[in-house]
Length: 240
Image 1: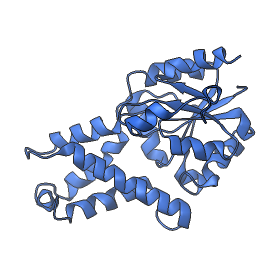
Image 2 (image 1 turned 45 degrees about the vertical axis):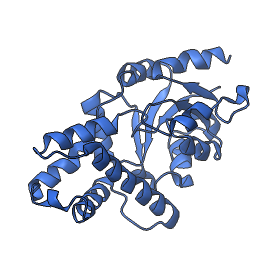
Image 3 (image 1 turned 120 degrees about the vertical axis):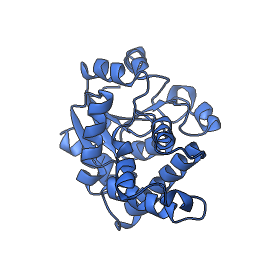
């Protein structure tokens, strides 16, 4: 793997959105709710909308705007409408920014610092620029640069994202590796000539999918499979 740049999916791969968001929601009121379910529904709305925008070209390229639209729609639903009275406008605006302060996985910061010594490391995320910058400061993520859907003009899996990041790094896609905890993201990246590194995260993809992902050497479809960012360099060196 003659790779010069590692491009990272962020939500779920680098940061633990589920724990952070559900904890912030629980701290937002005394109400007894299934806050994990709330966080997952919020995230599911984001996943649906980014794919729709990637395919149609219609919709906002600011995930902050998108997150707020989804939050307001959820609070208008029969399941969550009782929370509308608890969270006023200021509180909803504050909650929407929880996505800027997501905690990294235990290996994320240390692993990225090690990888930065050897590779260009950058986000390739649907998150907007300010969200990714704030998150980097909060979780101590030492990116060399930030690529976002907002900058590249679409969301993953639109080709603009993968090819745009490689273009701005002045590298062919074959010298870039996509690092993600989502096999669909890696399949799209591979379709545009990128190398692929699958990171097993406990909350991303289903257990069956995680267990089924194999390297090309094992007859699978990705270049490397790791459980931690700290495993990436040894895995790459082991391929030489």
